[in-house]
Image 1: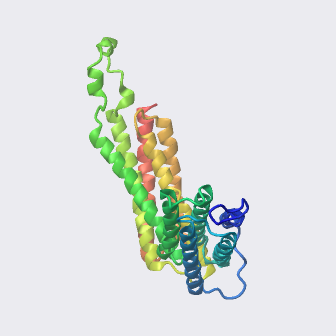
Image 2: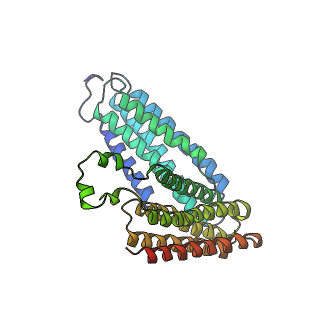
Image 3: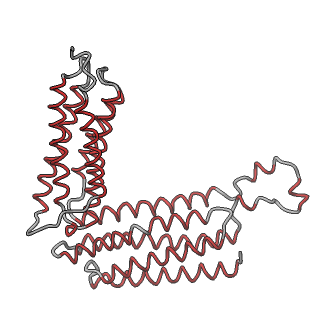
Length: 348
């Protein structure tokens, strides 16, 4: 039988390979690190990891080129490319599992996610090829190949140790909190009574009822006073993240497992800030439900106090940093008291 019309089982090696890649992806996503015996060299790990990633990218290119135009590769060709790709996948997953938790859970999560993305991209490329074997290079195949390249290229930009991984987390959190604040400020500036002009064109039913009747669509003056105070708590969130970033950059150390673990604790605590800020911001949009605001304010205040407490007890907090930790802790408490006072006087 010609290569143009391969036997039904000619592509079986690629189907098996696709299943194997998916299994490797799932194992990386859900598996535990190997126990590290003896000394572990992070620089050596990255050197070998970069070679493994480069190999996966190159094998994906070879695979895509082989199936870029008719005729299909021979059964023997399919076996060879499947074996070659499988070897690169095995190397990548093996190297990933070398990275022990003692080097930092935050770092390991970053490497895990990048490894999963590369393997997932390779599995998608195989599925595209298997869905239309023997056809000319499609846009979908081009995009899938590019997806593998992009997933592999991102390894060059990954943080290379747990301190850098924490700084990456904090930078992301700072950006998210900043976005939430800017959106709130923009909404306040633009929306006096956002649907007023629409409702003015309606009947005079609302006037006859003795009021506009659209309080659910805009902020009252008491709402704005409450929001202003809540913004103070949100700004304290951003300030806490920025000051913590500076402390980690200046004082963060990787010389002991205890210090590395403290960086993980800071990362886990800091990740709670942005979602808490978002929840508070969402509860401030009209109609403002004060019970929801109170709940989200208390939640954010607790999260911030937890971050500051962990910071204070960690090695990143030098003597010079104690003052800002205490200042921000007082600022959180002050804003919390002001907000609760406003909620109490405004009622529900």
